[in-house]
Every structure is written in C-alpha cells, then in structure tokens.
Length: 277
Image (cartoon, rainbow, N blue to C red; front, side, top):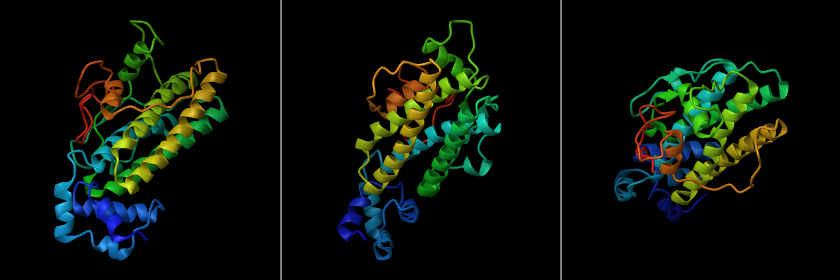
C-alpha cells in the first residue's frame, strides 16, 4: 500500500473532480496498475480533496487521458469497421461534450489469414483501451467526437504522396490499403503517448499510459513489418519520438496551421486539449 504522503501527491493532478479521481484509483487498482489502500482511498473526500482539485494545474492528467481517449475512439472505430464491418457500441460513445457520428468504414476483404488475425487482435486491443480509459475517467470521460474515416484518408494519402491530385484512397478496399492506413494511426498513437508522458505527474495515470504505449508500439512494429515484407515502406530509423497533443492534432486535423478541427475530426476533438499547433 502507498502511504498518505504518496496519495497526497497523486491527488494534486488527477481527475477533473474528486469523484472521478476516486473512480480512477479504484479501477486502476483492480487492473493491477497500482494499489492504494482502502483507508487512503477513503481519504480522497471532503475539504482536502476539494482543495487539491482547486490547486490542480490548468492541464490536468485527466485532460491528457481524455485527449488520448479521443485518439482511441478513432483507432477503435477504424479497426472495428475493418474487422467486423461496424463501429463501437453506442454505450461506449457517450460522455461529456458533444457526441458525434462516424462517417465511413467498411469490412476489409482480407485474403491473408495472418493480416486478418493482426487486424482482429489490434481491434480488440483498441476496444479494450476505450473501455479502460472510459472506466478510469468515469463521468469525466469525453464522448466520441465526429469522426471521418472516409474522405480524410484521401487527404492523408495525398499529403503522404501515396496518391496524386484527383485520385482517392479507400483504406478498406484492400489489405495493402488497410495496412498503410493502419500505420498512420499506430505511428501517431506511439508518438502521442510518448509525448504525453512528461506531462503526466500522477504515477498511476503514467503507469496506465505506459501500458497503452507498449501495446501501441507492438501494433506499430507488427504493421511496419508487414508493410516491409510487402515492399510498401522503408525502415528509415528505429527511433520512437514524441509529439505534443498540439502536434498530434496537426496530423489528424490534416492541417499545417493552428486549427480546432479538420481531417479525421471534422468538428474537432472533445475535451480541454483540442487545438493543433
């Protein structure tokens, strides 16, 4: 069990209110991400918790995890459609902020058992990430924003030089297209979690983020290996760098300028961190 001093440090920057903070600690403990004694958890109530909440920094750890949840919604919708032909269940998409729809998505005509299995496993992992973050954040969790996984891929492929002006890119038309699209998400996911790590002070939150980062890295490595085997990518270097939330949004909004929406998120993401840089 952690001592009271450690718990006091945990609540300095945690959830967006005391109730959500207690919920996260309970879920994290059950998931093996860190154990806080019952007496310590009980101490996260009353004036002390309220004061800690008021003293929290302007960008809380929960705000960062909500930013990650926006990305997980996108990934989960992309992979669920590719494997199952449909997106997330409605009960996994509600929360704070405006709940949006998903435009696009279809089952991929897989011909390789290996690639189909890769897609299936990643789809399950991304679904688990959404479930975990939503449970951890509780009532502070943001809802799924509007997501475009159709025209946005054409814009992304054009920017990456995969297609020329006037052509379209359907991420679900073939295994090759699916893998190229998947690598965009996995690369963004890895760099987003790595970039967020220095911003998270709550060690329990950091442990959770590190666990998701490891899984995203497995995904990226698997997809990259498959692309290399098919001659669809060059392995320039093996360094995983980090991107700030603003830099990540610059990619998924598909704009080189400061923006609040665009690309995969036509109306922007939900939560405090929503502007690209």
